[in-house]
Amino acid sequence: MAKKNNTSFKIIVVITIIIFAIVTALVMINAQSEQKTETPLETQIPIDGQPILGDPDAPVTVVEFGDYKCPACKAWGDQFFPFLVEEYVETGKVKFVYINVLFHGEESELGSSAAEAIYKQNPESYWEFHKKLFSKQPPSNDHDSAWLTTEIIEEVANTVEGIDIEKLREDMNSQSIAEELKVDSELVEEFNVELTPTVMVNNIELENPFEYELIVSLIEQELEANE
Image 1 (cartoon, rainbow, N blue to C red):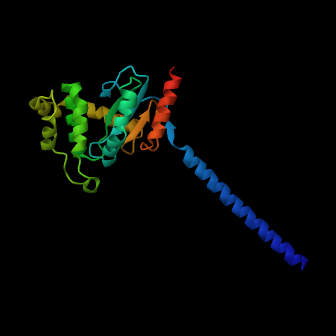
Image 2 (cartoon, rainbow, N blue to C red; image 1 turned 180 degrees about the vertical axis):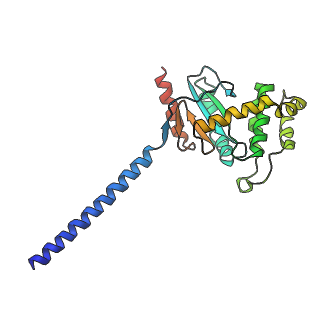
């Protein structure tokens, strides 16, 4: 009987150790998952020549890597961008920068070329065009349809003051605009941008750009550090 009891005790100990190891592993994985909400970058994104909304001397820079064909980018812009502008950009605390990503091929390139051409022609017209072009995006369940066309671009541009359509057509196909898109693509590669939208607060990349409270927390943290 003593031998049987001893064997049972050993089995219980082994099972307990295994359960403890599993629980410990799950706790560690969960802790790592909770902590991985942001990734510090070695350097801040260079923004020279990029469209900037707000005071260029604002202490905090929020950068979005986005694609005009991306439904998630439209959703982020609809849900969070207005609050970011109202709370931080218009108060001079944050400058917002948009960098083109060409993940969806020709349509992405066409939309980005138009936006860059408008920024070159009249920077004050850029953000209105930017917003209105996103508004033309069809519902997300129709994401793959070829909607981003020259006709749509010109239709939108005609509703924005300060845009010369003939010059827009000319500039969209120019070498200078091609060079601007090349710069953006090099930044996408340099900073390992794999998803759109990718949002960065100064030199900190968010793992989930839809955690607006975290964006606010990071902005406040960076503002405090710059005081």
